[in-house]
Length: 281
Image (tube, rainbow, N blue to C red; front, top):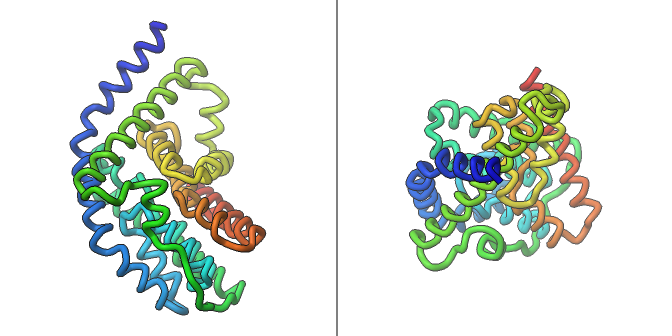
């Protein structure tokens, strides 16, 4: 019990200062989402052959529902598979607010965003060239259908939404921090588990599995582990590249071909792990 109390107290003291920064960050993100959401959807629909470029850039916009919208548009055959993957690979979910609230140098945050977008764009064009899937018209899932259901609470004003999101993520950060601290206490800093995560090959494989968690948990876990020094840069990138947020869940729900959905998820995982492994090497 003494260990648990110490871990809880230590986790709260380490993270309580994040609250105002998280709130301000989410307030800005909510404003951006409400101003640009539908416009980005229209651009994605009309992107055509340059879809992966538009998708990679669109994924950088801090919107909780971008990957969900892309999944719905792909299910309606308004996007190519390469465009969908570009959005998945470039989206950052909770990485951006957590890093900003931890006062990570802006040049590092921008570099990560650009690197994720670059990998997404390159992979998207390559996949489209190989697959040569056409762009067919159809109906897609609207961005707010899953945004409200799963993630943001898109109604009630941006201040209320930002506050609820801040509290939800702060509590999750506390939980993750406590779990990591407990793991260090029980396993020791030199355990095989932590050693495996720090390896240039095994680390990205494990981080990619975490990234497949279909909600904000994946990006929170990966980002916190990187900030605490548990994993390296390439391993972090693997988890963040694979982490497409609720997009994967929406894809499995609305795409008629489950085989097609599983192939896309497999490609996403493979690209993320290989990219992270190469960055580590």
